Length: 273
Image (tube, rainbow, N blue to C red; front, top):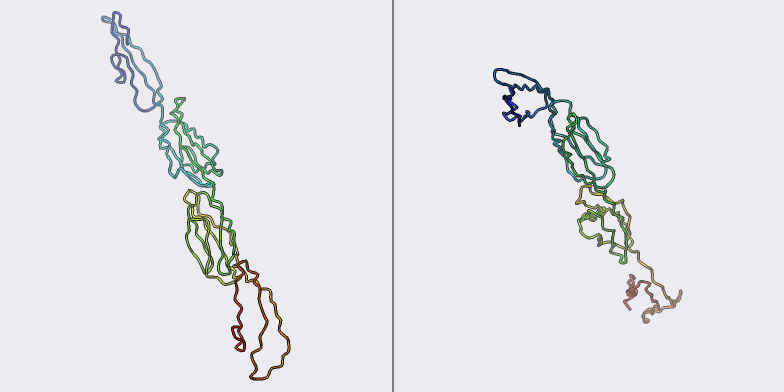
């Protein structure tokens, strides 16, 4: 408050009230304040020069997603409109930035992790409160490594490790299959023995990083395993027409784990027995 002795103190500036409280405008500027002291018929004036620097607001703004894939960029800017020689103070937390002044900036992050982009605006030593944006950088999906197994001449069983950030997989078998599955396995059916197929598995991303394809794997269905033959048949026989059929002493011993097979003859001269 003003010290009142025998006279009266007053201000000629509208920014100063009767109690001597100075309320500057919302912009940085210079003021010349004039005070008058009146005592009886005597008036004395004095002036005060003061520079007022407004504390800015950083107004940090994110123009892209805050969750990205490693190697991608985010776009940030400040919406602050400078009126004098304000200086933006950026911290990109190790990201590689491209831009000037208040932006926009493209900021690239190559390593998975969590990062904080921050901004302050300095107006001649009057610094804005720091504003921050958190960026999450995710790791690229790992390509599935497909294993092929076949215990049946008509099937191939495919399997691979579950891929982080993938809840579905697209199985591509050239000319045969194009199917979406949720489990990291698939059985190809309808094959013939020792049939080769080309297989690609695509991990379908549910995160920021894109889908990823496996390499092309060549898989084969199981080949037939020849039996062990026991043949006790002479290489030359005498046969009189009308005689009983010649018994062929031929057996086949299966080498399949199931051990089940059928012996047949394609020749019309040999019956099922």
